[in-house]
Structure formats: C-alpha cells, structure tokens
Image (cartoon, rainbow, N blue to C red; front, side):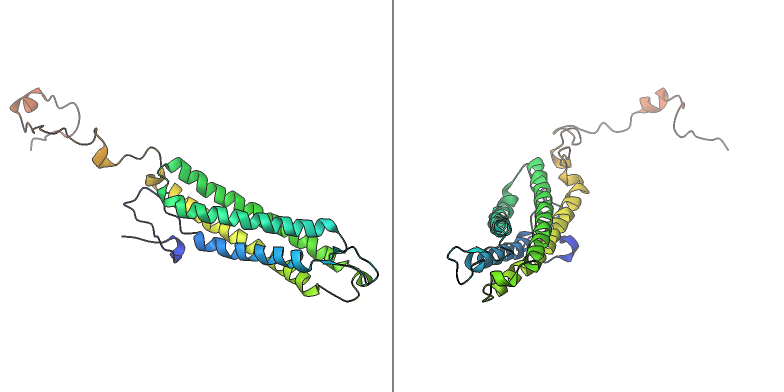
Length: 224
C-alpha cells in the first residue's frame, strides 16, 4: 500500500515497506526559481535610469543603490539556492543514512523559511523606495513596469517560499512519526534476538514443568 503526503501528486509516494523517506518536493522549488529570475532580470535590464541631462544612471527605486543591489543579489542567490535544492531532491532517494535524510529535510525547512523572510523584507524595502521615488528623477517614466514587476514577484516569493517550508515540514513530520525514520529501527527479519537460530528444535511440553511449578504466580487451578 502506498500513500502520498496530504494527497499531493508527486512522482514518488511513501511506502510503509521502505525505511527511506522519498522526496516529492522538486516541483515546489520551480515557482520560487522562476520568480527570482524575473526579479533579477527586471532590475538588471531596466532598473537603472537617468535624467535627460545626466550621463550616469541611478537605481529606479528613489536612486537608492542598495535597493537595486538587494533585489539583484537576492534574486541571483535565490536562483542558485533553488537549483541546489532541486539537485538535492534528485539525489535524495540515494541517501542511505537516515540522519543525513533528516538533515536534508531540516535544511529545506530552514532555508525556505529564511528566504520567505528575506523576500518579505525585500518587498517592503522595494515598495517603500518606489513609493517615495521622485518623478523628476525619471521624467520619461522608463522602467516603471519592470519596477512594479519586481515588487509584485517579490511579494509572490514570500508565499512560495513559505509554502515550500510548510511542505518540507509535512515531510519531516511524516518521517518523525514513523519508527522507520529512526536510527534505532531494526527490521524484525534481520534481528538475531527475535529470530530462532537455525536448526533449533522445539522441545515441547515436559512433565517436569508441572511438577516443578509451585503455583506462586500466574493462573492457578481452582477446585470445584
């Protein structure tokens, strides 16, 4: 019998006969990766403008270079992080150590929660700088759509990374609630203490058992 986590459609489902928890979160890393590319591309291509009488270009977000650097840096790092975890999801079924599997799932939870927080900060930062930007700094209104797109996808990234952290936590709870996800688990068929040694014969009932039994414990016969 096989079943999936929270009825999520994934390529590999959980089987009670396996003591290796498979990964089915590869598809959840795709939206954050796409959003990070959009944010990075919008700022890198159209995020710098200048006045007609100026040669040097400045950040479209209130000429605050830190805002553009934050968006470009976070976008590129988030893309690389998504690529790394997608590679880990592919390699995950080949990890034989239960301890390493736990570390991988916990890392997915922590990193996803971290990026959700970072994009929340980024969304607030970019939205604030776009709101206080002066119209005279960009009289031709160039790059406005790119700036709004970056803010929008930064907002979406908050929930996609939070969702990834949630599904990773569900995977961890599923593994933690199973005895098969423990280092102490021993397959009964492989436990030498629980399987009679080969060639051992059952001795059966012996009259000496009843003769030596004093009735001090257990069930005792009653005379009627």
